[in-house]
Length: 328
Image (tube, rainbow, N blue to C red; front, side):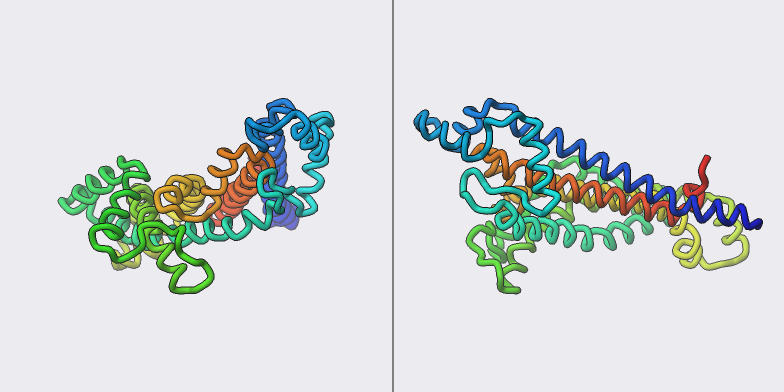
């Protein structure tokens, strides 16, 4: 390989992640603009009335508008808010008058822990089921598992959550039916709060990952170089894990990222079913109370998390598939 080509390859390896990073920053900027615009579509007095309630006097509304700078032009308020956000100041809640970061920080950690815990439990189970089905195509066990996974995938998350709640919380009484009364801080109390929500999320996630693993692995097993490995007499286990799974890793990496994003965004439903004090519960409360500052902060933080996961998945897929590093 010539030095010029080596240099081009090195530039390509650096240029693609850089382009992805620039795209992620641009996307986050658009998210911030849309979020701020939608949170402040009301008139200044309307925002004040949403925060203070319908019985607030005109004097209270005027004082609120002046205190929070709502009488300034929208673009000035946006640039001021964006500057404070970049410095780590997400603002003060219009309802509790406490820093938003102090309120949503612990809840965000719980939500991420909940989603990550569900993914870590569901991923090995899904891989095992997918490999099992792909290695026995069109057998009775493959068909039975396909029917089962499709049936579970057709259930909405709140139905799965209620079923888990009724079985383990009400009928068997093994775990508390809601997490509101659990005092977070102790290890065992927190474990009890996480078990049922994670169980519901795992049941909801496994069908998608298992069927995608099956499809990706079946396609990889039909590749010529994998068939050549079979003809060389390699064991089926070695062919699957050392050869086919490398090719299947590209769609699986994207699927895991999408699943994690779906867990972060869909956890709102599960948190409400189990009264789990996470970021989803905070978002629902902020919308109910008309707390625009908290809504902006929560949506922006969740948007940043989702964009970061997508960016990491794109970089990881590029590492798995060298073809993506070649500029066309």
